[in-house]
Length: 156
Image (cartoon, rainbow, N blue to C red; front, side, top):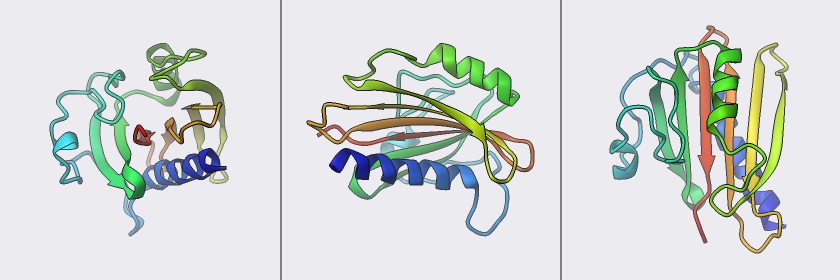
């Protein structure tokens, strides 16, 4: 089923962004890595991939990219602890509600194999008549930074 393939591709992209740099270095706030005009227009703490979401004051986008199939990915570092960020996101996201004509699929949380906390929220079209998915993932980095990854597939 196409929805499963799209969900897997976005999840892999968001997780890859949250894992860190391919050379093993840690993620540090800096300029946006995408040459995309849409991501370059981001001001303040509002996500360009998910414009309805504003991240906590002082958050920094450290990566924005569009991958194969038009999926948009963003990685943000937030200046709050994991629990405070999780609570902030639970209040800011449309938990248990439809979002952008997508059905809420639930929250997943736990501990990674490396011993770090994560939480993830998903929306998709469970009827299967399109392949859209939105994923928001919160992750504690090994250096103590708290990262929020956002993945949004394009509208069909």
